Structures are given as structure tokens and as C-alpha cells.
Amino acid sequence: MSTPDSSEIQGIFDRIAPFYDDLNFWLSLGQQRIWKLMTVKWADPQPGDRGLDICCGSGDLARLLAKQTMPGGEVIGTDFSANMLAMAARLDLSRHSNLSSGIDWVEGDALAMPFANASFDCATMGYGLRNVTNIPGCLREIHRVLKPGAKAAILDFHRPSQPWLQTFQQWYLESVVVPVAKRYGLTEEYAYIMPSLERFPTGTQQVRLATDAGFTAVHYPISGGMMGVLVVTKPEDG
Ligand SMILES: C[S@@+](CC[C@H](N)C(=O)[O-])C[C@H]1O[C@@H](n2cnc3c(N)ncnc32)[C@H](O)[C@@H]1O
Image (tube, rainbow, N blue to C red):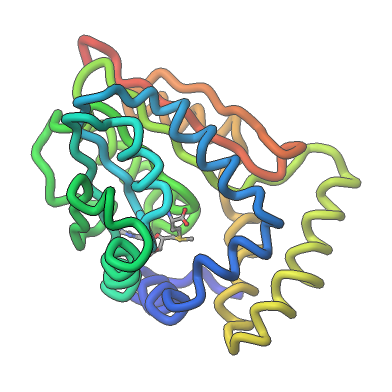
């Protein structure tokens, strides 16, 4: 499978949007919520902070972040898929009306975000870095919008180092995830996860890329290394 360009990726997520949350809940056996809670904790949000969730999709990570920045805080969820943002806004109204006032949904490209330099106290990103077409450029852009001393926590799939876990992960993606997605008419969209994961830098490589972008960085493997969280900090003098 060739590497998709930015508009193809946008199209994939526009098509997935109506089914995204339900499919992911089942495909992760409910684990995603735990991984996202860990991610928010690593971003170190404080009440009153201005937080950013990049590649926010339908917004669940943004909502978890908003719970930590309240009272007095503000969260922006940004994504380039208009359908995903429409789903986020719809979910606000139907399920999360108590939080909607704290979150703004802003259409934007993670490679050129429509935000001022040094304007966020913390940031999260879930399953976005693997999908952008320029990972070093995206890390530089995150560095640009964070205030000195601020952290971003970036959750994504990861290839485990143990061969049996690699085999399990590949089997799970090909024999469980893709067939389930097929029932929703989304075979191609989910078949794209495995090749994107094969191209995705390992934790060690992610740390190197983040360091090159100006951060101090640590990568935490979770779920046996099948997932990982890259935690980056913008130096006080950065
Ligand atoms: C796998 S979804 C993750 C959604 C959500 N963060 C979550 O954890 O469930 C990836 C999201 O990244 C968005 N995305 C991919 N590349 C992007 C880019 N260059 N700029 C903005 N959004 C992008 C897609 O539209 C999609 O909503």
C-alpha cells in the first residue's frame, strides 16, 4: 500500500467519522479510555490552563483534558476533518453538554496550526502523529504553540519489541480489526492502520525526532509496547 497524501488521509477520516467512537471502543476492548486518561495525566494539565488537543477527531481526549483544566481553563480541539469536528460538536450537545462551554472545535492542519506562538500550557494528541505526512514538521509546530515549560503527551500505536506480541498485534489488526471494520463498509480505512504503523518511528526514534524539534522527550511503551506515549517538554529557555 503506497503512502497516502494529506487529502487522502482527510478523506479516510471524513468517512470514518460517524462510526469512529463506537468502533474504537469495541476494537480496543474498552482499553482506549485508560490509555487516554494516562495520556492526559502525562500532559500535566492544571486548573485554569489553556490546553490543546491536536488531531482531536470526535473529541474524547479533548473532553478528558477539559475536565482537568477546569475550573477556569479552556481547551481547543483541532482537526482537519470537518466531519470529525461536526461529530465532536454533535456529541457535545447529546452527551457532554456540561463540558461543551469549555471546548472550542477549530478546523486546522496539524502541520500549520491556526494558533499563536507560545499560547498553550499543555497539549495532547491521540493517534494523530502516525497520520500526519511530516512528523518532524508536526513536532516543530507543537513546539511553536506551547509555552516554555509546557508538556505535550502524544499517544499512538507502537510496534512491540517482543516477536510474539508483534505477531499478536498483526493478527489482531488483520483478523479482528479489519473484518469488524468491513461490517461497517470501512475495510480500506482500517486496513491502513498496519502499513501506517510499519512506517511509524519507534519510541527511540520518536524521542530523537522530538529532541531535534527542540524538546526534552521520553517515550513510555504501554500495553506490552503495542501502544506508546511520547511525552515532550518545551524547555523554559526554548
Ligand atoms: C485516528 S484519528 C484520532 C482521533 C482522536 N484523537 C482519538 O484519539 O480518537 C486521527 C485524526 O487525525 C486527523 N488528522 C490527520 N492528519 C491531520 C492533519 N495533518 N491535521 C489535522 N488533523 C489531522 C484526522 O482527521 C483524524 O480525525
